[in-house]
Amino acid sequence: MALQLVYRYVALNGSETVESQILASSEDDALEQITKKGLEPIIVEVEWKDSFSTIISSSVPPARLAMFYRAFGARVGAGLSPDRAARLLVRNQPDARMRIMLSNLEDATSRGRSLGDAMLESGFPNRDSRVISLMNDVNKLKKSFNNLADDANRIAEIKRKIRGLLFEPMIIGFASIFLVWADFAFLVPRLKHFFSQLNDTGGMPAYVQDILNVGVFFKAHEPYSSIVYFVCALALVIFLFSPYFKKLFLLIPAFNKLSIYADQATIWSSFYLLYDSTLPPDEIARMISSAATRKDSKEALDNMAEQTSGGGSPGNAVLSAGFPDVIAMLAGSALSSPGKEAVLGGLEQLNEILRNEVLEQTQKVANVSLLLSLLFAALIVLFLAGTTIIPMLLSVISQA
Image (cartoon, rainbow, N blue to C red; front, side, top):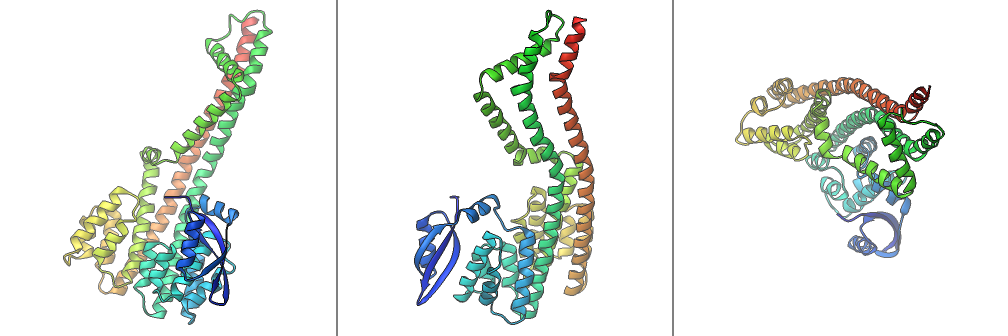
């Protein structure tokens, strides 16, 4: 997919002047989009600041999405038309991507598109757009937006907790990269000078000689050695954030359990939102399956969809679909409740249990993460000492 930038445009809509923003891969693409809106472009230019913010953030933060859903639902529930509600909210929106989505939403709804279809066209999540497209009653529409806001806040809370887990390891990791570089670029060459002042270096440990040779080579080939070092460090960082490392990371039981519960929390909150609509259980399961992050979750949802497609009981299907045992029992009990309201109440309780479980598992992972971070920091300190202070002491002792 081509890199998209934010373009600011001024255009004529009949006799009225319109100013807004769009995401486009080129100026020609921007002009084409503006023309499709039925506007006559006057000025089209790149907004570099907003473009940078959309590049580093590929989606709208869940907390920002939650604020929009609650505010938009309140305005539409109060009787405002969707295009006017979007127009009011876009004015003070600080997030560039969200501003563009709201601008597109205003345009699509003013052209007569249904709210759900307009949301999908504007870049809102597929599940959220589908939930809204199935709600025709204004009171239910407001409730649906509030439910979406609650779910987005839950996702934001989980992401905030997980980011907190990564903060200390990232600080230690980046500090280690620069400390090791400084060790070979500055400290080890000074050690070479220190050892050259000694009359007899025969007692010097063999590994010290190797470190000195590496340091001399590193210093003699500056700045190329530093470039190669930091390119290798960047490659390591990319690997650590890749799906391959994630698979290795999930071999640690605490991290794997957190991944399972976080994915299940997303699945059943989505099921709750969609069950309140008119969709049958098999279609709900298929829709959620396409957005699930874990392979075992996708397989369980596909099994559930298959077992309920012929009119099978969702409560029985979930028990044999392949969900984790405890979650299958709780979900099966909820889906077997008599009446839609009872089912929704059971799913709401399940979501609260999963939310608390995710928070509990996050704390356990935090403890493991802290332990691993301290162990890594200790190894770095030992490495630095082993390449600076310890060789000096051993060499001085060997001269005594």
